[in-house]
Image (cartoon, rainbow, N blue to C red; front, side, top):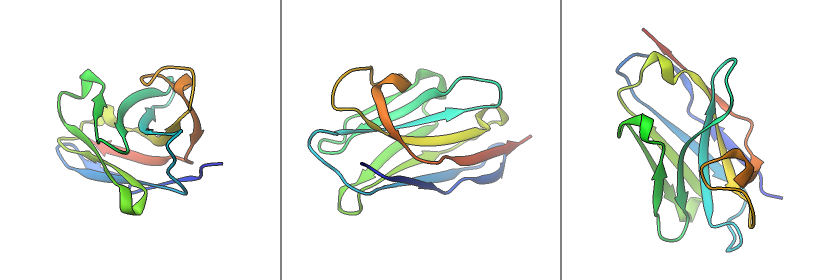
Length: 125
């Protein structure tokens, strides 16, 4: 079982930045992808970004307009999400997740089966 622990959330003013971290208990060949999702109150959990551990190939949701950057530190088994130019609509609980070996899609929650506890990001106007 993969354990994921997020950190780095908090309260920030619009236009500010935050860097989220996700520490994974292990990294295996059968689980080559890590993702970030977010869930705002009353809304479904939505895809933010994903990255391959090995090659560092990244995927993003287009709505972020290039403001977010996902990266990884393989030596530390940690994935990061750098968020710049934050907007009030970015307010949500942010989750990291481990892509399941088979099934589902990279851009949706059904593609992931291990999740962290989430970290709250609040952007004030």
